[in-house]
Image 1 (cartoon, rainbow, N blue to C red):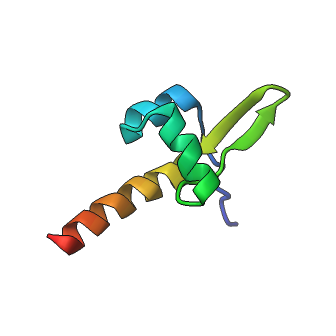
Image 2 (image 1 turned 180 degrees about the vertical axis):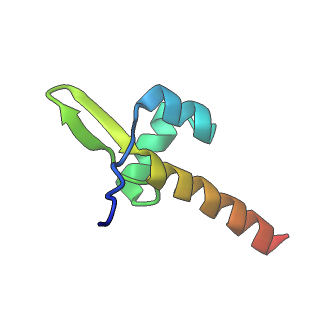
Image 3 (image 1 turned 90 degrees about the vertical axis):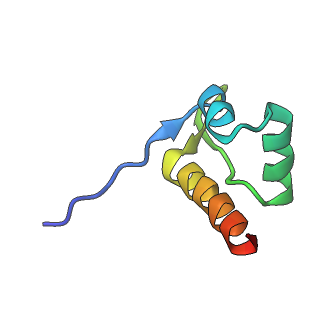
Amino acid sequence: MSKTVQPEVERLPSVVARTGRSRASLYRDVSEGSFPRPVKIGKRAIGWDRAAVDQWIADRFADSEATA
């Protein structure tokens, strides 16, 4: 029996705090395709997949270590 991992939803204030980016920067990066797109979780609510944000952060560290 395989266990399915449910995605964890992360709201904007948490994403801003974890990435160190401003709200405007995040939305600009989403529109450019360089940050994960949010998902609609309600009529007027969106959130990000926590694992996708974790991967984005890990990629930034990997990129900085590769250039060092």
